[in-house]
Image (cartoon, rainbow, N blue to C red; front, top):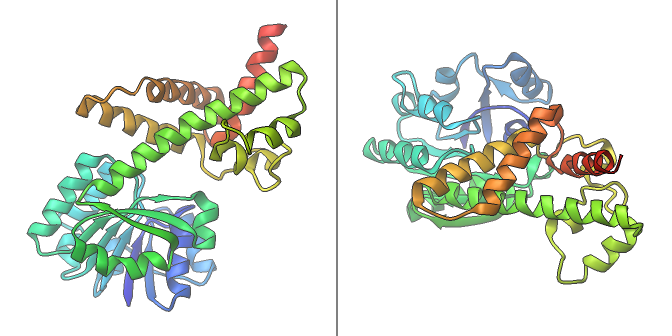
Length: 299
């Protein structure tokens, strides 16, 4: 299939390359020269602009930073709806539910099949093609999209109608952010009480406190060798991205009347973490930040 891929950053580039490995004819575009060059150096084919990328495409995949970029990419006069007639549309950006539904409605009115399909799994999952896709859209659109999604991921879930994929992603990442803070706090407390980190890990992983943030992505160095905590918190999933998702979740909570006090507090903590200069680090760096705060409190 001829596929246009717009957005070749840390997530988009390996996703586009996996589509290429699956045998699709992929043409990529990113306005950032270094991102486009990275895709080309890895063997990908780039286009000089978005219009050239989507021309003649049977499917268009977007992986863009925010709702305003998605809206512009699809709805502007020079956008995808105007230049990719009949193409299947897949937006894997993480954006607000309202924008996802607005763009999907415009696409449907213009005769396009579209799914919002944000991902979970981080850069590692993108590189290994083990991402989870949470897709929103009609059953027919999902059926068309599923083979392409399976070239990039392992767990493909049809979450519901347009916007449901984004809703699932925001709920998941709010829980992830809260869980990571809990894991980090438990490890900091164990450190202060003189409990060996590995002992706590071994106990908790088979006890009622077990959670993914501790057992699979331990924020303290040692217990999980593959975790970013053992690589000076190279992301992974950056603090700035977690803060973005927590902020989107809080906007959704405010708009829907949902009570999310822990989500709100997690957003405040990650905002402070980003302001401290840790924004580019993996979001599990909150352990190191809390550990430093504990030392400062003692001294």
